[in-house]
Length: 159
View: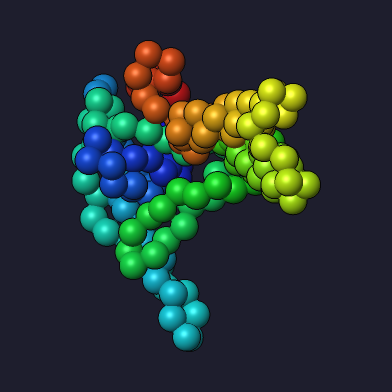
């Protein structure tokens, strides 16, 4: 909608943030915005409007993600998303790696073989938990990829 704030990622993986100034059938115009930080405070810089085709939008940030400005560039990072440490696999990697490390360390301290028949199941459980977390970490994105599931389209609304 004209006048609304938008943040999105282009096909070249660069993030754009600004205000929509015009909407057409297959494109929209964005006045880019950048925030510059200095010792005296912040300064907001607006660049001229430029057209964006709907097909050029690669991704949009998920709800709750944080938009940061650094060196006139926009970055999207993890924000206040619920259960993000489970969704991105970090919790599984920490728990699985810690459980395996603790189990192997304890058996070595006791002078036993950490990969003995009675201990291999515990090592396998910890390793499997770590691998599940690793797979989740590689497949999680803090943004919505445009494609089959998500797409942009313009809708004409009469006055």
